[in-house]
Image 1: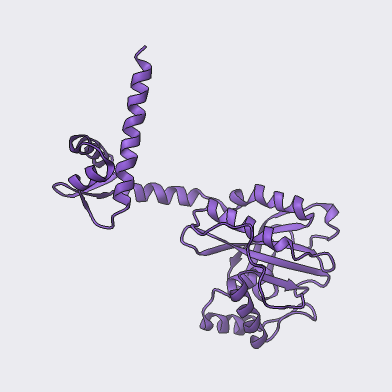
Image 2: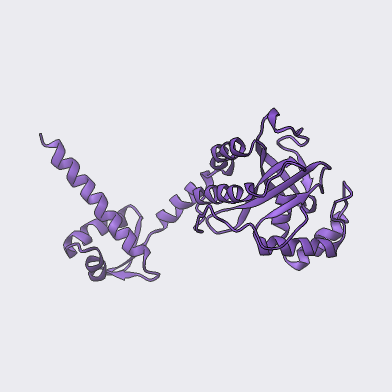
Length: 270
């Protein structure tokens, strides 16, 4: 008969602990006990008792008598959680959903040096397009939609060095092979927030890509749809961007998620 009150008390302590942690998170500098008690509406003695327990667990640091700040243990736990977040795991179900909606191949790619690497894919034989590059396959950055997303984040110096290293070699008549053309393309990517591949890597295949970002808003991967050149549809772009945003949010990205993302205002013969 005593289990229910004890359970309620335990939950109440946890709720009060979270109130104090949230209050500390709202201040860049150490906070006085009286201020924490006022913000959380806790009695000073209650706040003091819970803070002592949090200090013992290193979740809170006592910098001076009566002054508190978030503890290093929270940073250690946060880094552990971040390290265990896997972009493939976060993307898998959403990639499959996007594939079911479009009927086309959906790729997840990351950057390694001067290339992108395909790390996962959702596709079926019904897409009508042969998958040439398997998971683990590589492609030059400037010839792929996801690669252009990464290049668009590089500095002018890095872009120049990339062009010199790769000589911007092409594989089709549509390939971008000059620094001037690449810079023009990357300006469009920066303005529109997505990228395209217009049969630049493989003839007969067109792609569109949106970025996936981590909790620091760093571009860590690209999500792309590949389709036969005569089948790709502009309306897929909205869902592609929405899906990339949802994956990003699951990795800690703090941007606003919207299914009605602009598809860009620049006319391109794609």
